[in-house]
Amino acid sequence: MIIKSKFSPRWWLRNPHLQTIVASKLSRETKVHSNRERLELEDGDFLDLNWSRRTSGAIVCLFHGLAGSIHSAYIQAVFNQLENDGMRPVLMHWRGCSGEPNRLARSYHSGATDDIHRVIKLVMQRSPDTAVFAVGYSLGANALLKYVGEQGESCQLSGAVGVCPPLVLSVGADKLNSGVTRIYQKYLLHAMRAQHESKRERYPQLMLPAANESLNTFWRFDDALTAPLHGYADVHDYYTQCSSRQFLRQIKCKTHIVYAQDDPFFTPAVLPEHSELSDSVTLELSQHGGHVGFIGDASTNNWLAKRVSDIVQEQQ
Image 1: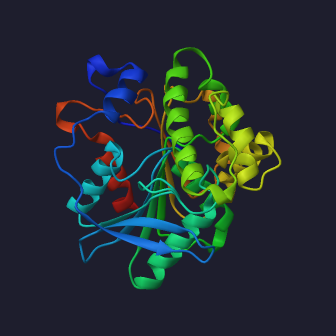
Image 2 (image 1 turned 90 degrees about the horizontal axis):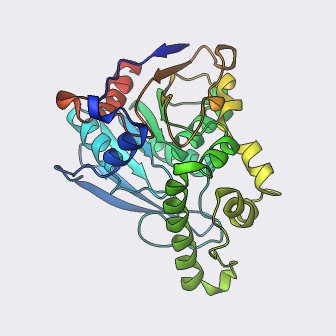
Protein backbone atom coordinates (compact mmCIF):
# COMPACT_ATOMS: atom_id res chain seq x y z
CA MET A 1 0.00 0.00 0.00
CA ILE A 2 1.25 3.49 -0.87
CA ILE A 3 -0.08 6.40 1.19
CA LYS A 4 0.46 10.15 1.30
CA SER A 5 2.28 11.54 4.33
CA LYS A 6 0.78 14.28 6.48
CA PHE A 7 4.18 15.89 6.94
CA SER A 8 4.25 19.64 6.37
CA PRO A 9 7.59 21.50 6.60
CA ARG A 10 8.20 25.00 7.84
CA TRP A 11 7.75 27.40 4.93
CA TRP A 12 11.42 28.30 4.85
CA LEU A 13 12.53 24.65 4.98
CA ARG A 14 10.92 23.29 1.84
CA ASN A 15 14.32 22.94 0.19
CA PRO A 16 15.50 19.31 0.55
CA HIS A 17 19.09 20.30 1.28
CA LEU A 18 18.01 22.58 4.10
CA GLN A 19 15.85 19.79 5.51
CA THR A 20 18.75 17.36 5.37
CA ILE A 21 21.47 19.64 6.74
CA VAL A 22 19.48 21.49 9.40
CA ALA A 23 18.09 18.21 10.77
CA SER A 24 21.60 16.78 11.11
CA LYS A 25 22.74 19.87 13.01
CA LEU A 26 19.80 20.25 15.39
CA SER A 27 20.92 20.97 18.93
CA ARG A 28 20.59 18.08 21.34
CA GLU A 29 18.56 19.60 24.16
CA THR A 30 18.17 16.19 25.80
CA LYS A 31 21.08 13.78 25.73
CA VAL A 32 20.55 10.05 25.52
CA HIS A 33 21.04 8.23 28.81
CA SER A 34 21.78 4.59 28.12
CA ASN A 35 23.81 1.58 29.16
CA ARG A 36 26.60 0.42 26.84
CA GLU A 37 27.16 -3.30 26.31
CA ARG A 38 29.89 -4.94 24.25
CA LEU A 39 28.61 -8.05 22.55
CA GLU A 40 31.47 -10.44 21.74
CA LEU A 41 30.83 -12.37 18.53
CA GLU A 42 31.72 -15.91 17.55
CA ASP A 43 33.85 -14.64 14.67
CA GLY A 44 36.15 -12.78 17.08
CA ASP A 45 34.65 -9.34 16.46
CA PHE A 46 32.26 -7.30 18.59
CA LEU A 47 29.16 -5.14 18.43
CA ASP A 48 28.54 -2.23 20.81
CA LEU A 49 24.94 -1.80 21.92
CA ASN A 50 23.34 1.12 23.74
CA TRP A 51 20.38 -0.03 25.83
CA SER A 52 17.56 2.03 27.28
CA ARG A 53 17.55 2.23 31.07
CA ARG A 54 13.81 1.56 31.11
CA THR A 55 12.82 -1.82 32.52
CA SER A 56 9.43 -2.25 30.85
CA GLY A 57 7.74 -1.72 27.53
CA ALA A 58 8.18 -3.02 23.99
CA ILE A 59 11.78 -3.24 22.78
CA VAL A 60 12.74 -1.31 19.64
CA CYS A 61 16.03 -2.22 17.92
CA LEU A 62 17.59 0.77 16.15
CA PHE A 63 19.97 0.57 13.18
CA HIS A 64 21.71 3.82 12.23
CA GLY A 65 22.83 5.01 8.83
CA LEU A 66 26.25 5.37 7.21
CA ALA A 67 28.83 6.80 9.64
CA GLY A 68 26.12 7.19 12.31
CA SER A 69 26.21 6.42 16.03
CA ILE A 70 24.49 7.12 19.34
CA HIS A 71 25.61 10.73 18.82
CA SER A 72 23.63 11.19 15.57
CA ALA A 73 20.83 13.74 15.95
CA TYR A 74 18.17 11.46 14.48
CA ILE A 75 19.16 8.59 16.80
CA GLN A 76 19.10 10.78 19.88
CA ALA A 77 15.70 12.15 18.89
CA VAL A 78 14.05 8.77 18.30
CA PHE A 79 15.74 7.15 21.32
CA ASN A 80 14.30 9.77 23.65
CA GLN A 81 10.92 9.81 21.90
CA LEU A 82 10.51 6.04 22.20
CA GLU A 83 11.39 6.19 25.88
CA ASN A 84 8.94 9.03 26.46
CA ASP A 85 6.26 6.88 24.84
CA GLY A 86 6.94 3.94 27.14
CA MET A 87 9.21 1.80 24.97
CA ARG A 88 12.77 0.51 25.34
CA PRO A 89 15.11 1.34 22.46
CA VAL A 90 18.43 -0.41 21.92
CA LEU A 91 20.87 0.91 19.33
CA MET A 92 23.20 -1.46 17.51
CA HIS A 93 26.36 0.29 16.35
CA TRP A 94 27.49 -1.15 13.06
CA ARG A 95 30.95 -2.66 13.31
CA GLY A 96 33.54 0.08 13.75
CA CYS A 97 31.02 2.88 14.34
CA SER A 98 31.03 3.07 18.15
CA GLY A 99 34.32 4.94 18.45
CA GLU A 100 36.67 1.94 18.26
CA PRO A 101 37.75 0.08 15.11
CA ASN A 102 36.37 -3.43 14.81
CA ARG A 103 38.85 -6.30 14.78
CA LEU A 104 38.17 -7.96 11.42
CA ALA A 105 38.84 -6.90 7.84
CA ARG A 106 35.10 -6.74 7.25
CA SER A 107 33.04 -3.94 8.75
CA TYR A 108 29.48 -3.15 7.65
CA HIS A 109 27.53 -2.43 4.49
CA SER A 110 24.03 -1.87 3.12
CA GLY A 111 23.14 -5.55 3.13
CA ALA A 112 24.77 -6.77 6.36
CA THR A 113 21.74 -8.64 7.68
CA ASP A 114 23.83 -11.10 9.72
CA ASP A 115 24.45 -8.57 12.49
CA ILE A 116 20.83 -7.44 12.48
CA HIS A 117 19.82 -11.08 12.96
CA ARG A 118 22.32 -11.52 15.82
CA VAL A 119 20.96 -8.56 17.75
CA ILE A 120 17.29 -9.35 17.20
CA LYS A 121 17.89 -12.96 18.23
CA LEU A 122 19.71 -11.81 21.37
CA VAL A 123 16.92 -9.42 22.35
CA MET A 124 14.27 -12.09 21.87
CA GLN A 125 16.24 -14.64 23.88
CA ARG A 126 16.59 -12.22 26.77
CA SER A 127 12.96 -11.00 26.64
CA PRO A 128 10.92 -13.90 25.18
CA ASP A 129 7.60 -12.48 26.35
CA THR A 130 8.15 -8.94 25.05
CA ALA A 131 7.16 -7.52 21.66
CA VAL A 132 10.24 -6.60 19.60
CA PHE A 133 10.27 -4.04 16.78
CA ALA A 134 13.04 -2.67 14.57
CA VAL A 135 13.73 0.74 13.02
CA GLY A 136 16.41 1.48 10.45
CA TYR A 137 17.66 4.73 8.95
CA SER A 138 19.15 5.13 5.45
CA LEU A 139 21.79 2.36 5.10
CA GLY A 140 20.33 0.76 8.22
CA ALA A 141 16.86 0.93 6.69
CA ASN A 142 18.04 -0.79 3.52
CA ALA A 143 19.66 -3.59 5.52
CA LEU A 144 16.57 -3.95 7.74
CA LEU A 145 14.20 -4.20 4.76
CA LYS A 146 16.48 -6.78 3.18
CA TYR A 147 16.47 -8.70 6.46
CA VAL A 148 12.70 -8.85 6.91
CA GLY A 149 12.36 -9.80 3.25
CA GLU A 150 14.88 -12.61 3.62
CA GLN A 151 13.13 -13.84 6.75
CA GLY A 152 9.72 -13.91 5.11
CA GLU A 153 7.28 -16.04 7.12
CA SER A 154 10.03 -16.78 9.66
CA CYS A 155 10.37 -13.15 10.76
CA GLN A 156 9.61 -12.86 14.47
CA LEU A 157 9.54 -9.08 14.66
CA SER A 158 6.23 -7.51 15.62
CA GLY A 159 6.91 -4.71 13.17
CA ALA A 160 9.61 -2.83 11.26
CA VAL A 161 10.11 0.76 10.11
CA GLY A 162 12.51 1.91 7.39
CA VAL A 163 13.34 5.62 7.11
CA CYS A 164 14.77 6.89 3.80
CA PRO A 165 16.20 3.56 2.57
CA PRO A 166 18.35 3.63 -0.61
CA LEU A 167 16.24 0.77 -2.12
CA VAL A 168 18.38 0.74 -5.31
CA LEU A 169 22.04 1.27 -4.38
CA SER A 170 23.31 2.03 -7.88
CA VAL A 171 20.81 4.88 -8.27
CA GLY A 172 21.96 6.38 -4.98
CA ALA A 173 25.62 6.08 -5.95
CA ASP A 174 24.91 7.87 -9.23
CA LYS A 175 22.87 10.61 -7.58
CA LEU A 176 25.52 11.32 -4.94
CA ASN A 177 28.09 11.74 -7.70
CA SER A 178 26.16 14.49 -9.49
CA GLY A 179 25.67 18.20 -8.96
CA VAL A 180 25.51 19.69 -5.50
CA THR A 181 24.96 16.29 -3.90
CA ARG A 182 28.67 15.62 -4.35
CA ILE A 183 29.04 17.57 -1.10
CA TYR A 184 27.30 14.76 0.79
CA GLN A 185 29.41 12.17 -1.01
CA LYS A 186 32.61 13.99 -0.08
CA TYR A 187 31.59 14.25 3.58
CA LEU A 188 30.52 10.60 3.89
CA LEU A 189 33.52 9.18 2.03
CA HIS A 190 35.89 11.26 4.14
CA ALA A 191 34.37 9.68 7.27
CA MET A 192 34.49 6.19 5.75
CA ARG A 193 38.10 6.51 4.59
CA ALA A 194 39.13 7.82 8.02
CA GLN A 195 37.38 4.92 9.72
CA HIS A 196 39.06 2.43 7.39
CA GLU A 197 42.52 3.98 7.84
CA SER A 198 42.12 3.99 11.62
CA LYS A 199 41.52 0.23 11.54
CA ARG A 200 44.37 -0.33 9.08
CA GLU A 201 46.79 1.43 11.43
CA ARG A 202 45.50 -0.33 14.55
CA TYR A 203 45.48 -3.81 13.03
CA PRO A 204 48.37 -3.97 10.51
CA GLN A 205 48.15 -7.78 10.56
CA LEU A 206 44.89 -7.50 8.60
CA MET A 207 46.92 -6.17 5.64
CA LEU A 208 44.07 -3.94 4.53
CA PRO A 209 44.45 -1.95 1.30
CA ALA A 210 44.78 1.80 1.70
CA ALA A 211 41.73 4.01 1.39
CA ASN A 212 43.40 6.77 -0.59
CA GLU A 213 41.97 9.95 -2.07
CA SER A 214 41.38 8.28 -5.44
CA LEU A 215 38.40 6.48 -3.87
CA ASN A 216 36.36 9.66 -4.23
CA THR A 217 33.04 8.19 -5.37
CA PHE A 218 30.88 5.48 -3.86
CA TRP A 219 31.34 3.43 -7.01
CA ARG A 220 35.13 3.46 -6.53
CA PHE A 221 35.09 3.03 -2.76
CA ASP A 222 32.63 0.16 -2.84
CA ASP A 223 34.44 -1.55 -5.71
CA ALA A 224 37.86 -1.28 -4.07
CA LEU A 225 36.90 -1.95 -0.45
CA THR A 226 33.27 -2.72 0.42
CA ALA A 227 32.70 -5.43 -2.19
CA PRO A 228 35.93 -7.47 -1.81
CA LEU A 229 36.05 -7.18 1.99
CA HIS A 230 32.52 -8.57 2.27
CA GLY A 231 32.61 -11.37 -0.27
CA TYR A 232 31.15 -9.72 -3.37
CA ALA A 233 32.70 -10.07 -6.82
CA ASP A 234 32.68 -6.32 -7.48
CA VAL A 235 30.61 -3.20 -6.90
CA HIS A 236 27.97 -4.31 -9.41
CA ASP A 237 27.53 -7.62 -7.60
CA TYR A 238 27.31 -5.81 -4.24
CA TYR A 239 24.74 -3.27 -5.41
CA THR A 240 22.67 -5.93 -7.17
CA GLN A 241 22.53 -8.35 -4.25
CA CYS A 242 22.04 -5.78 -1.48
CA SER A 243 19.47 -3.34 -2.91
CA SER A 244 16.38 -3.82 -0.74
CA ARG A 245 13.70 -3.00 -3.32
CA GLN A 246 13.81 -6.56 -4.66
CA PHE A 247 12.95 -7.92 -1.19
CA LEU A 248 9.80 -5.85 -0.55
CA ARG A 249 7.49 -8.43 -2.09
CA GLN A 250 8.78 -11.12 0.29
CA ILE A 251 8.08 -9.20 3.53
CA LYS A 252 5.47 -10.79 5.78
CA CYS A 253 5.75 -8.81 9.03
CA LYS A 254 4.13 -5.38 9.37
CA THR A 255 6.56 -2.95 7.74
CA HIS A 256 6.29 0.80 7.21
CA ILE A 257 8.61 2.85 5.00
CA VAL A 258 8.89 6.64 5.41
CA TYR A 259 10.30 8.37 2.35
CA ALA A 260 10.55 11.93 1.00
CA GLN A 261 10.16 12.33 -2.75
CA ASP A 262 12.68 15.18 -2.71
CA ASP A 263 15.36 13.11 -0.92
CA PRO A 264 18.63 14.52 -2.36
CA PHE A 265 20.41 11.17 -1.94
CA PHE A 266 18.20 9.38 -4.47
CA THR A 267 15.87 9.90 -7.42
CA PRO A 268 12.23 8.79 -7.92
CA ALA A 269 13.66 5.87 -9.91
CA VAL A 270 14.20 3.98 -6.63
CA LEU A 271 10.50 3.99 -5.72
CA PRO A 272 8.65 0.68 -6.13
CA GLU A 273 5.31 0.17 -7.85
CA HIS A 274 2.26 -1.05 -5.92
CA SER A 275 2.82 -4.51 -7.35
CA GLU A 276 6.28 -4.72 -5.77
CA LEU A 277 4.95 -4.31 -2.23
CA SER A 278 3.64 -7.23 -0.21
CA ASP A 279 0.34 -6.82 1.64
CA SER A 280 2.39 -6.25 4.81
CA VAL A 281 4.25 -3.19 3.50
CA THR A 282 3.11 0.43 3.66
CA LEU A 283 5.09 3.06 1.76
CA GLU A 284 4.44 6.56 3.15
CA LEU A 285 5.50 9.25 0.68
CA SER A 286 6.00 12.92 1.48
CA GLN A 287 6.54 15.68 -1.05
CA HIS A 288 9.14 17.29 1.21
CA GLY A 289 11.50 16.09 3.93
CA GLY A 290 14.96 15.65 2.43
CA HIS A 291 17.14 12.80 3.66
CA VAL A 292 16.27 11.87 7.27
CA GLY A 293 15.10 15.45 7.71
CA PHE A 294 11.35 16.01 8.14
CA ILE A 295 11.58 19.19 10.22
CA GLY A 296 8.00 20.26 10.78
CA ASP A 297 6.45 23.43 12.08
CA ALA A 298 7.27 24.96 15.46
CA SER A 299 5.02 22.47 17.29
CA THR A 300 6.51 19.40 15.60
CA ASN A 301 10.23 20.11 15.35
CA ASN A 302 11.04 16.41 15.78
CA TRP A 303 8.27 15.26 13.46
CA LEU A 304 10.24 12.24 12.27
CA ALA A 305 10.99 10.87 15.74
CA LYS A 306 7.35 11.24 16.76
CA ARG A 307 6.12 9.69 13.51
CA VAL A 308 8.39 6.67 13.94
CA SER A 309 7.23 6.19 17.52
CA ASP A 310 3.59 6.49 16.46
CA ILE A 311 4.07 3.89 13.72
CA VAL A 312 5.63 1.42 16.17
CA GLN A 313 2.72 1.94 18.56
CA GLU A 314 0.23 1.39 15.73
CA GLN A 315 1.98 -1.91 14.89
CA GLN A 316 1.50 -3.22 18.42
